[in-house]
Amino acid sequence: MSWPSDTATSVFVFARRGRAGEVKTRLIPRLGAEGAARLHARLVGRALATARAARLGRVELWDTRRQRGGDLGERMRRAFAAGLRRQPRVLLIGSDCPALRPAHLRRAARWLAGGAHAVLAPVEDGGYALIGLRRVSPRLFDGIAWGGPQVMARTRERLAALGWRWRELPGLWDVDRPEDLDRLRALRRW
Image (tube, rainbow, N blue to C red; front, side):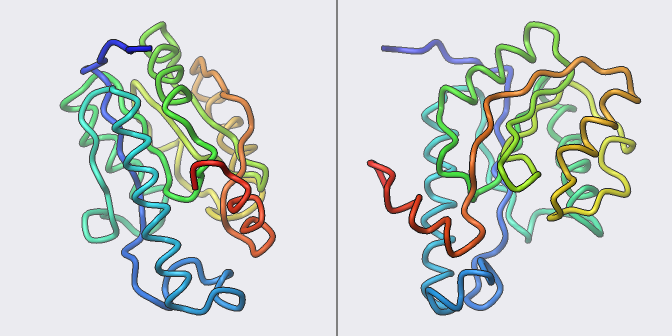
């Protein structure tokens, strides 16, 4: 099936620079530093392919060399601010959710175009794999313990406090822990 292109929605892939010993550190005991770096590179490649396959607007890789700010929240806020100056909608995805599909991105873009201020794809560990916005506020990102189990809960609280309408995609899983590697291997197209 062919999907129409949505050129009003940019997709940003947020990723760390893939240096051995600095990425996927919780997987190093099982994969070694080089193996974890190779896995990271594959996951980034898959995230970029997913973003392109969604056939939305511009796809951009935001690696650590491009990101600016003290913590993840500030870096995301700055990326959204830059993107929303150029496009009416921006989706930001991480690089460690191989369960994220082009259809998820297309649905998120449709929800934003339909009036939602934000769209999120929660993941099992309490974070999210995708956040899409039509507007940005520092209040959405400030003071959150990034990487902790309360990221999604805190984000919901912030969205409610801002009075924004949001939608959530079905829950997904990401690759952070050694037990996630078995799920990853079970994916058909991995």
